[in-house]
Amino acid sequence: EVQLVQSGAEVKKPGESLKISCETSGYSFTNYWIGWVRQMPGKGLEWMAIIYPGDSDIKYNPSFQGQVTISADNSISTAYLQWSSLEASDTAIYYCARHAGGSSHGPLKYWGQGTLVTVSS
Amino acid sequence: EIVLTQSPGTLSLSPGERVTLSCRASQSVSSSYLAWYQQKRGQAPRLLIYDASSRATGIPDRFSGSGSGTDFTLTISRLEPEDFAVYYCQQCGSSPYTFGQGTNLEIK
Image 1: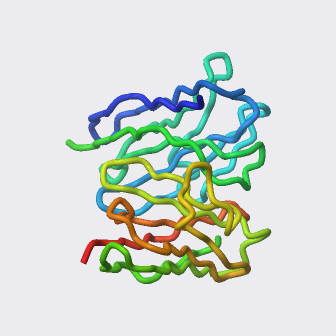
Image 2: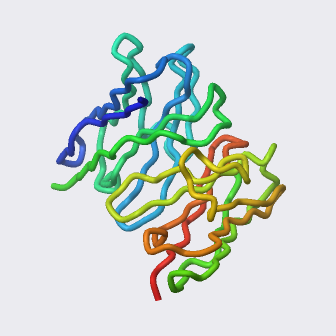
C-alpha cells in the first residue's frame, strides 16, 4: 500500500527557516515524481514543484522558484520542502503528492494528509 | 503557463440531480493530460479522473470525464450526498502543472 505521511503542523515567525517532510512507503521511491501543492486558507490548490528522486530532476512553478526548495533523501524515501526565510503569506496547508506513473505527465494519485504551516509574529 | 478556468464557481443542487462542471484551458492541453480531483472540507484532494476521461481506481461510474484540446467537462450522472465537495481540474501536459480555481458543489 502506497503511503505518504507528512510531518506535523508548524508555527513559525517571519524570517525563520523551515523544512517539512513527506515520508513515503509501499513503492520504489526513486521511480516516481513527487511534489508539493499549496492551499492557502479558504483558497484553491496551487502546484509548487516536483522532483524525480531517481536523478534529482526538478520542475518548479515559476511563482515559487527562489522562494522554496524541494529535495529528496532516497535513503529514507522522503521528500522535503524548505524555506530559508518565511513570510506571513506562506501560511497555508502544504500537501505532498505522488504522480501516478513514472512520467511527470501523470495525475497526482497519492496524497499526504497535509502539513499546516502558520507564520505569525 | 496554461490557465485553467472552471465554471461555475458555485453550484447548488439536490441529491439525484445530474451535474456537468466545465474546465477551459487558455491553450491546448497536450495529449489530454487533464485530471479532476474532489476535495472535501478538511481532507486532501482525491483523484477522480485522469487523461480527461479515465476513472481512477475505486471511483464510481456515476463520475465521467470528457473533452480534449481546451475544453473539458466532469459529469456526475446522479448526485449522492457524499458528492457535495469542491472539484478541481489540473493539466499535467505543460509545466507548471496548473490547477483550476475550483467549483464548489453545494447542497440546495
